[in-house]
Image (cartoon, rainbow, N blue to C red; front, side, top):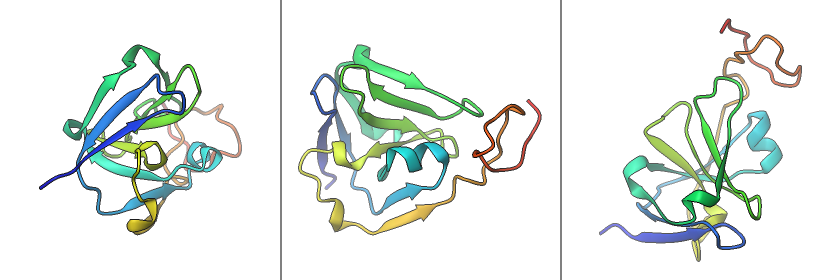
Length: 133
């Protein structure tokens, strides 16, 4: 039986549920994930349901614009993102899942720092091979 995990941002404006049992958590070493200190649970798109506050989500995209990073526009908390490398999955901020024991699963470091940087004018601290747009 699959568990349902409720989640929310800090202020509660955005509420969602994840109907999926992650088997591991991940970190990423890209410049965005490092700065937001993200620990994520990878869940299939169909397993994430926004219950409240879709209109309170704001979108941040950069580099290739494939990944979609969603934040609460009220409190600023990163809640989840559509994954660049697996666009049919979301990375959910595990600390937004109410009562979820983040120590119960192994954490695997993923490599994002070497993904191609698309824009030639990208910041020098965004490593990775430069590709033309």
